[in-house]
Image (cartoon, rainbow, N blue to C red; front, side):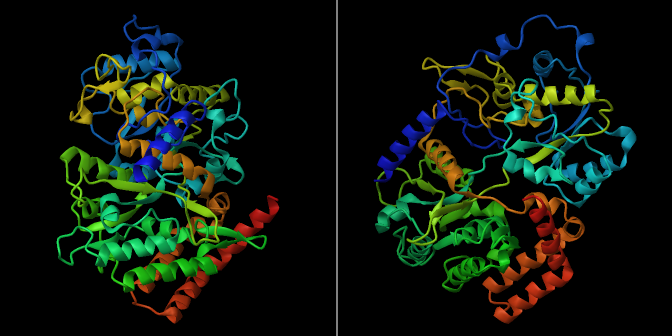
Amino acid sequence: MYRKRLLALSMAVLLAAMSFAGCSGKTNETEAPKETEAPTSASSETGGDAEQSDDSEKARITMMLIDHNGSPLSAEGSDHVKQMVSDHTNTIIDDDTIRWVPNDVYTEQLGLTLLNKDNMPMILTVNGPVNSTIAQAASAGAFWDLTDYLFDEEKYPNLAQANKSVLEQLTVNGEIIGIYRARPIGRNGIGYRQDWADRLGIAEPETMEDIYNMAYAFTYDDPDGNGIDDTYGFTFSKNMDTLEILQAYFGGGNKWIEKDGELVPSHTTQEYRDGLEWLKKMYDDGLVYEDWAVREASGAQDTVRNGECGMMANVLDDARRVWDYFDNNEIPAVTGDGIASMNLIGALKRDENSEKSILATTGMNGFFAITKAAATEAELEACLRFLDKMCDEEMMLIGDYGVEGVTYEFNAEGNLVTTTDGAPLASLGHNGVNQAIAYIPNEIVAAPIELSLGRILEYAVKEDNIQYAVYNSAAAFLNNSPTYSLNGGNLDEIIQRARTQYICGEIDEAGLEAQYREWENAGGAKVIEEVNAQFKASR
């Protein structure tokens, strides 16, 4: 049944690729394609081996980008890559136009940059959502309002296709202040040990009761068959993403939800409370690690990979990577038949009488803001043209895979094959190019790549999730709430702390209500008022 479902999903995703632009995510690793036609060689399309063009005709744009791997655009072959990008975008690309900042100090440097108007780049990468610092800078006029420019299909055919629900999160005082760096909306989900389920005769879960029952069996029914009580059903961590994903299945929205014509925080709803009670039962019944609240999120994959735990909820990529580990290391299945494997599931029903849902991601990993260092409308449009051209297939191919004949080639079947597996990213000539790509409207390169079963299922579930995705109803209005801009971090922390303490039994219902009142008194009630004033004015 499982393999039949996987085959059906693989066919579905391949068919969808021919007509739909997909939603697989951009991470630091390369992502797979959705189309079946081989792209034209990047070197021929972008004039890779042609003589360098005259830079006097090109725009000079300054930008600040994130350095994740070290030595961006400085390894052997990088001059060739820079020339290809420069020619395709008609923009000067050199050490004077790009300011690279290491990821681990980027947030600090971003704050300092916003304070230094004389040294402001035209294109500024923001490595997170709109926070109080960004909102205040926007209100002070630091960024261009892109509302009247972004959707010009003639000038910016790629950017004009931006998802307006995602852009709402980048709206301050009614102005669109950024271009999001796209990530898949349907990326969240649950992964579990398929061979454990096969050994215990458990079908694929469809409801939250099924999830609980699977976690219980994985904890107490000896899924690995070693005769020892040494397994857990589900892995939680101090990262709140897992709890948010699981709790959202109960219908409480995505941090906020519309109820009776008003927007209310999720924690004020009965559905949120029902989800909270479910999480507490998981803890009380010993289906999760007792010390989950101090465990790092980075260890979640390890607990499933090493056979301690059977289920995880986060981005689907994480569970698929565990599956890759089983395949690459030929870890035997507990059934005694073949290799250990995972299954990936996305949207679920709360119960048999409910509709499917899944917590939507923000749809982005930070954004590009165009600052007033672009002093004229002509310079603004040059920045937009550059960002639009970087979303062309040719540039995405370079950003993700490099140059044909150097870092990848096409095999006899016409599939793209990388030739640098295992090489440090810092040693590749195209390292860093992807940090200048918004990936709008396509988040993956449309080149044919041979897919593993795990990849096929991952992409199919992500795409299926889109129709069930639950967004944060108040995202745009929170950016313009003065109280939330100043105190949002503290308010969010109160709710997260209350949830953790209640699950772990450190506080009872009275203690939970007391912390909710603390949230109201700390500015929460004012945030509700400010959000709904905007919400009603927008209708």
